[in-house]
Amino acid sequence: MTTTTATSAKATRNMIFLVLVASLGYFVDIYDLVIFSIVRIESLHGIGIAEANIREQGVYIINMQMFGLLLGGIIWGVIGDKFGRIKVLFGSILLYSVANFANGLVHDINTYAIVRLIAGIGLAGELGAGITLVTETLSKEKRGYGTMIVAVIGLFGAVAAAFAAKFGWRNAYFVGGGLGIVLLLLRLGTFESGMYKNVADSKVSKGNLLMLFNDGKRFRKYLYCILIGAPLWYVVGILITQAKEFGVALGSKEVLTAGSGILYSYVGIAVGDLFAGLLAQITKSRKLTMAVFLLLSLVSVTAYLSCKGITSSQFVWLSFFMGCTVGYWATFVTIAAEQFGTNIRSTVTTTVPNFVRGSLIPINWAFDAFVKHKGMITSGYIMMGILTAIALLALSQLKETFGKDLDYVEIS
Image 1 (spheres, rainbow, N blue to C red):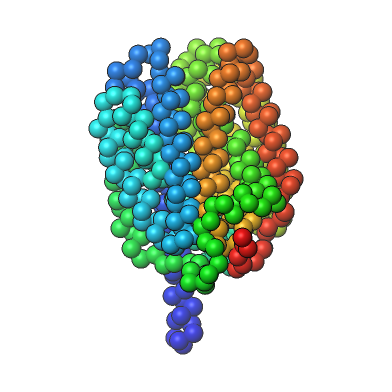
Image 2: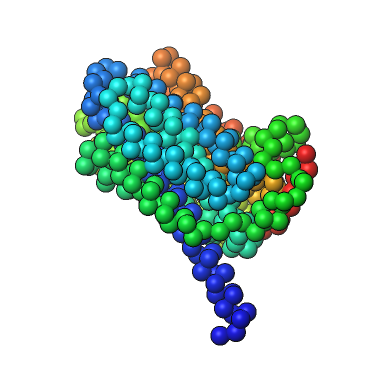
C-alpha cells in the first residue's frame, strides 16, 4: 500500500469515526430531550404531584428544560467558535451526565425543574457541535449524507428512552447519565475540524454573538433559520406530549400515552430524515425538501386532530405518520450550518436548533391561551396553521445552500 493510499484510508476511517461519534451524541441528545415527556406522569406522581396539577407542573418543568437549551445553545456555540468544536463535545456531555444522575434523585418539583434546566444547558452543545464538525470535514457533495446518518442514528435515542422508562423513571435518568459517560470515553479519539484550525490563530472575530445582530441581513437570515424548524417542536412538544389530554378532547375511550407516541413519532422522524436527506441529494435542493415536508406535516396533524374517538392503535400510527412528516431535522440544521462562515458557524449551528426547541416556551404560552377560549382541538389547528405559514415564509427568504463551499469567514 502506498503512502498516499494509506493516508487516504486513515482519513476515511477518521471521517467514519467522526460521523459515528456525532451520531451517538445526537442519540444521547434525543434520549434526554424526550425522557421527561415519556416519564412525565409517572415521575410527577412519584414526587407527590396531584393528578389535577400534572399538566401545569409538567409544562413548568419542560419550559425550564427548554430554557436550559436556549441558554446552553448560546454558551456552547460561542465556546465552539472561540476554543474549538472538540471542547464543546467534551464539556457539554460531562455536564449533561452529572445532571441526569442528579435527576434520578429528586424528590420535589423545584429541584426537578432546576436539574432539568442544568441538563438542558449541558445537552445544548451536542447536535450543533456534531453537525458543525461533520459539515466542515466531509466534502460538500457528501456532507448531506453525513448529517442524514447523524439524524437517523441519533433519533433512535427516543426508542432507547421509551425502553429504559419501562424500568422506572429514576432508572431511566440514571441510564441517560451512564450513556453520557460512555460517549465521553468514545470521544477521546475525535479530531478538530480542519476549517476551524485554519481560522483558530487568525485575528478574525470568532464566536462573536453580536455579529448575528449587528448586520440586518445576517440577523434576518439567522431568524429565518430558526423559524423554519418551529413546527417540529410543536408536534412533539405539545400534540404528542399532551396525548392524554388530546385523547380526552377527541373522545377516546382509552388513555393515550405520550411514551408510545414519542417512541413511534421518533421512529417516524428517523424514517423521514432518511427520505428528506435522499430527496435533498437527488433534487440538489434543501429548500424544496423543507417545503415538501412542511406541507406534509400540515396534512398529518390535520389527520390527527380530526380523528374522533381515536384509539391507542390509531394514535400510534398517527404519531408515526406525524413523525415521518416532520423528519426534516437534519436538513434544517444543515441549512443553518451552510448559511454562515466558519468563525460563527458553531454559534449558529448550536443556537439555532436550541432556539427552535426553546420556542416551545412561547408556543406553550400561546397554545394555552388559545385553549382557554377555543379548546384543545381548535387550538391545535390554529397553532399548526400559524407555525407552518411562518416557516414557509421564512424558508422562501433563504438562499439555496446545497453544494456551497463552507471554507470562508464572516466579516464583522
